Length: 292
Image (cartoon, rainbow, N blue to C red; front, side):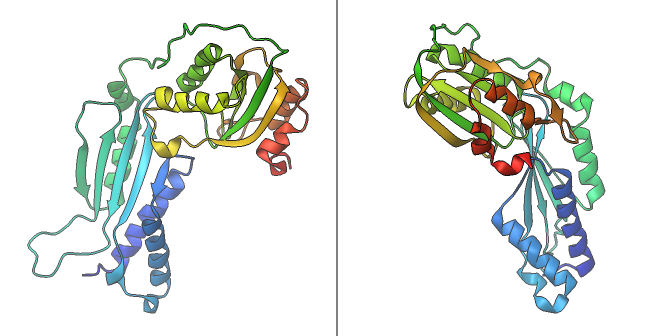
């Protein structure tokens, strides 16, 4: 049984509001079916003769809230687009919300209510400092021991140099893990946080970068949702001389820009690489549009 058009419009507006609030990489997950339903619903509301509201499926949206560097809350929001049959004794809520605490023994929290006010109040509560302190009583720690054995490297070494692009890299403890694990693999390079994030890996073994990334994903990123582990190799050089003496975290040496100051100044990164004799590489990794 279809809901009134006014209610359908309200449900769609909630979905669009969430999309506008959580637009960052990895903050919002909308499956293909929900995206298609939102488009069809929008078309129907603009021209009611274009379709039947009874065919619409409920909207499913997942929001990921970073409580701290080591814990994320997954909020699953279900926006109902159908009413129960007339002879049904139960009236379903227009909105359902379930909350999963990652890496926490606490049970999931579930609730149901009508209207956006309740949802907005719930999200505001979860993002409050008081809630964050309750969920993260201890400071995050690196998941990889700092005392990794160091194997000497030389700038005369012949290496494979691989360049990786991350849509977003912000968690400090995860970057520390990369730096701390590298010496035991004779890996050098640099890691740069931000949107985007960059990782350069120099390894004496042809498949060393692949093995290193696999270990980082398994040991350091095990608690991160799979959709937030996006990392893409953009460029690989083989049989080249090592130019980095160690694996460095260079984020604090590069100026930031953007509304949230989370985008490294790629002009400065380019100068940094040119000083290492790597002129033109950044354009290959990021694409020329980054510098327009």
